[in-house]
Length: 362
Image (cartoon, rainbow, N blue to C red):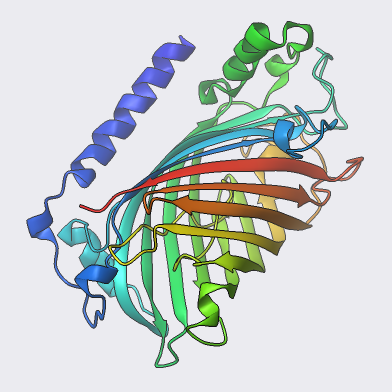
């Protein structure tokens, strides 16, 4: 029954998304005020992001495995610059630019699953003082708009996203973790998924704006600062965030950095015919969140069940690096340390994020 529900959910998602992805090139029109030349136009990309507390430290074994946010998987497709249906462009044109001189727009699609567990997987009874078992299976559409801040020349990007999904057994999180452990770690098969949060349809609206700053065009190849601000709204999450990232490297891509799965903005940054064949960088950043609601801590919206007392202020400290090769492939790793999210949590959480992005030019 679970597999049948998943298949129906997946087919519904495909039926919704494929008509949008099939828009033809002749339906494209230039962005009003665009200064992007053909050589600067970014092509589409496909990315896979895998996050797990198992590889929170890539060099040594740690005890941060199968605890709290324990696993995430996300697939991302972003169309090339200005490749979108006319009705999407009309909607975007009606949204205020708020100081952006736009040069390009991109339409993207996401599909993923997140998994949350308490620390003790071997306890079959309900654990009342630790994070509940929970899963989130979702698909979504996002719009990115790039440009410059007024006449300053400072690059800016904003992202609008809407995700739909489900929690509970239909999220397949319990099924996936149980079968994975049965196949690869039979001594540690989780025993408590029957206590997970109940099934609930989910809606999540996301927004994020980025700015990219460097002293001049020459230094921009080697170092930049990327502040960001945004938030999420829906029955799954409600929060506002503010932070920034510093990148140092060689031939820094003209994008806005690596994103983790639960960032308000999904990934951006395709390749162009002017992109150098090789780029690499390391980065460090901080993100602070004011959290008003987190369904995976507060419990289901319309029924009683497992929950813990949420802490309203949460911060992420991230470090990592990325390598872009042959102009068409980018590999990145991010390590995230997250402050306590609920009362009674014993240690900050840690997880690693691996991302592979294949970039095209059509």
